[in-house]
Amino acid sequence: MGGLFDLTGDTALITGGSTGLGRQMARSLAMAGAQVAILSRRRDAVIQAAEALTQETGRTTVPVVGDVTEGGQIERAVGEVLAHFGKIDILVNNAGVNIREPIERIRDEHWRQIWHTNVTGVMICCRAVVPHMRRAGYGRIINIGSALSLVGLAERTGYAASKGAVLQITRTLAVELAREGITVNCICPGPFATEINRLVLEDPAKSADLLAHVPMGRWGRLDEIEAPVVFLASRAAGYVTGVCLSVDGGWTAA
Image (cartoon, rainbow, N blue to C red; front, side, top):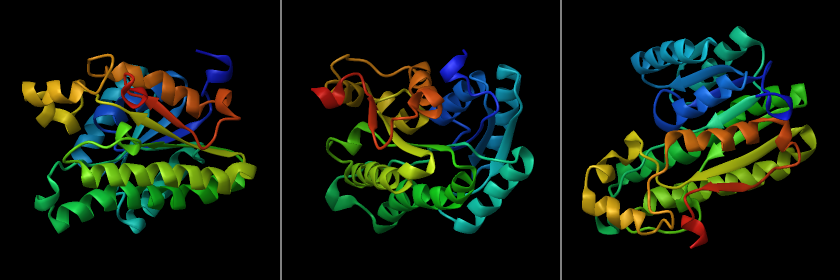
C-alpha cells in the first residue's frame, strides 16, 4: 500500500485496541505503515495483543495501560506514547461497552458505565491528544460510533444514546478543528462478530432478529473494517471531516 494511503511515519493510538475491531484496526494501520500504540485498562491483555500484533505485522506495537474514563490515566498514557514515538498523528477512539436491558430494568450503574466509557472516554482522549495535534498542525481523529448512532433498536437505550452522542462529538469537533489541519470523522459499524456481540452471536434467535435489520443478511467480517479506518487515517481523506461512514451491510439505508 502506498501513495495517499501510505501511513509510514505516522503514529496511531487506538483505545480498546487489544480485542475485536480495535485490534483489527490496529493491525490495518500497522500494515499501512503506521507506528501503533494500543491502549486497554487490562494490562495482561494489552501486552499479549501488542506482542501478537508485532509478530503478525512486523512492526513494533506498543502496549499502553489506561482507563478512558480517568483523565489522569489517559494523560499519563498519552505521555508514554509521546515519549516512545514523539508524536500522535492518528487517534482511534474505539473503547466501548454495551449492556442490553429493557428500559424498566436499566440500572443506574449500568447507565453510568455505558455513558462514561462510550462518551466521556471519547472526550477525555480527544482532550488529551488534540493539543499535540494542534502544535503539529496535523491530525486524524476517528471515533467509533455504531449503526445505533443513527437508528434505534429495542433494549439498547443506553448504548444507542451514547453512540448518538459520539456522532455529535465528531461533528462538533470537526467544526472546531477544521482550520487546524485536524480531521474528525466517525465510523459507524453494524453487527460485527466480536466479543461485545457474543451474547447475541451465541443465541440463534437473537442473531436472526438482529440480522433481519441488515439487507446483506450477515455479520460483518473483521477485515471489512480495515479499508475504512485506513482511508480516514490517511492523507487521501484530507478534505473529509465531520462525516459518519456507515459500515453496516446496508442497515441504515433500509
